[in-house]
Length: 248
Length: 294
Image (tube, rainbow over all chains, first blue to last red; front, side):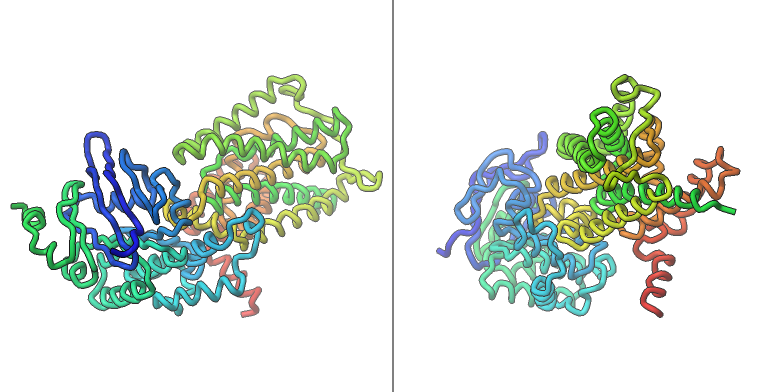
C-alpha cells in the first residue's frame, strides 16, 4: 500500500435533520486518481467541502499527510497543499488568466507581512505562472479576462489555479461537466499528465465511462454512506452500486 | 470671471475629497466590501486633528498621522467585529456607526457639540502658516503622495489579493488567501486615508461641524466613487473632481443637487455601469488611446 495522503475516520456532516455524510471512513493513497461517484445528493460535493474546509464536520477526523486538519481554516488547508476546483466554475472573472494563476502562486510564495506590498508582476512569478498556463493549454489567453473564456477553458484555468498552490492533493469537482467531446479529451490528457507528475487526485465524476477509464480506484457514496470501494471493474459489478444507480 | 482664489479653493477641496475616495476605493472598489459610513472616519480624522492642534497645541505634523491612526483603529474595530458575521451586516453596521459617531460628537461638549469646533490652526512649515492660497499646492502634493501609494497598492500582492476577494471570496479562501486578514488590511488602510482627508479638511476650513460627517456625506462619497469607477485608480480622481466642481457649475440649481445626482447615477448605471473610468468604459478606452498615441 502506498503512503496515505488523505484519510477520513467516522466523518459525519449533518445539516439540521439531513445527514449529508454519514460516518465515512476512506483513504486516498499517494499518486492515485481516486474517483468519488454516486447518484445526485449522495454527498460527494459535501465531502469535498469538508476536506477543503468550506464547512466543519459535525463529527469525525480528517487526516492530511498524517495531520489532523478538520479544525483548520480553508486558507490554511490550501497552504498545506490541498487544491480544489468547483462544480460550477468560480474563476476570478475580472482578473486575467495570468492573474488568476498568480493569486494562489503568490499565496504560496509570499507569506510574510513585508511581502504584502511587493509588486506581483515580478519576472520570476510571471514566468512560473505562464509555464503553468502553458501546461493547462491557456498560454495564448494569458491576458484575457477569465469571464471571456468558454466553460472548457474556465475548467482548465481552475485546474491550473489549483496547481499553482503546488498541491499534494487535488480535488476536482465534476471537471468534465458541460464539456464537449474535444474539451473532455483535452482535460483527460491533462489529468493523466498531472498524475504522471506524482500528484494525488480525487475526482467527482458523473460520467461513468470517464470515471472507469481515468480512476485507479473508486469510492461510491449513496445517501452520505460509502456503499462500495475498489478498482473500477469491481465497483461496476457491485450489487449495492447497481442498486443505488438503478434504484432497485 | 472665476477668481484664482476661488479656483484654488476648489482644487483644495478636490484633493481632500480625492484622498477620501481613494480610501473608499480600497475598501469598496478593490475588496468589494459594502462600506457605507466612510464619512464617519473622515470625521474622526477631522475631529482628532482639530482637538490635538487646537486644544493640546500639537503640531499639524503630529496630529496628521495620529488622525490617520485613530480613524484606522476605529475602522479596524468595526471590521474585526463585523467581518466574522454576514457581509450584509457590514453595510448595516457602517451606516449605524456613521449615525452613532455623529450623535456622540453632537452631544459631547468637549468635542464642540452641535456647534462644531472653530479656530483650528493651519499647518505650518518652518513657522510659516499654509493658508488658503498655498493650501491648494500643499493639498495637491499630499493627495499626489496618497495617489501614488494607492497606485502602488493596486499592483502589489495585497492589491491582487483584494481583487481576488472582491471577485469571489470563497474561491480566494480556497486558493490560500486569509480573507478576513486581507479585508481588515483594506479597512485599516482605507480608514487611514479617510482620517488623512478629514485632517486636511479641518486645517483648510479651520472649522468642523457634525453635519460634515453625516450619512448624506457617506452616500455622496459612494456616489462619487461609483460615478468615477470603482476599483480603478482613475475612478476616484474623476469622482473627486466631479463632486467638487459639479455643484459649483450648477450652483443656480443647488436645491436640486441631490435630485440631479440621483438622475445622473441612474443614467450612469444604465449606460456606463462600470463608472466613467471603470473597466471597459468608452471614456477610459478613449483616454487610453490618447495616452498610447493611437
